[in-house]
Image (cartoon, rainbow, N blue to C red; front, side, top):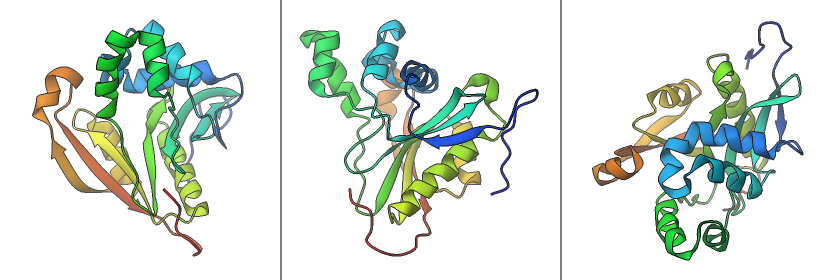
Length: 213
């Protein structure tokens, strides 16, 4: 793809499948930095949310960017009924208590997305603040596309909120097109955004069966 995510004074960024062993906490920190504003009403405070996320990662449902062996970005995806963040309802209730946990579960349910047959759902990109604008996001998207192609998926799907125009610009640059926008002004006060746009990118595969849900 001709992508270059090298860093001044350091080597090039390497991309790998899966969160490296021992990097779960770092992955959770990156994820929270990127999505904490959206997930805050469900998982705050941050000092509880980050270890909770780290403890419930499906580490094989991510592609990761590493610089000099350190995790600097990741993109999660949903396939085969499993996503990067995999906490069960019981886990939420255990961590936050039954009374407060039920309210949090209702909020988390608003973010649930189920892929159609032949789709791979991307759960968003989290990149270290010091590495943004250097092509790391593009590298991660193309690696997710490679995963989708290997699984014979016909398209990648993602959702982007209206308060993240920078992410939408990146997705459009990497071949995604908007197919639908759901306006949810009643959620703006609770979650901080009032519209969600669904975007698709076709996947070139070598044939065979479509990927399963």
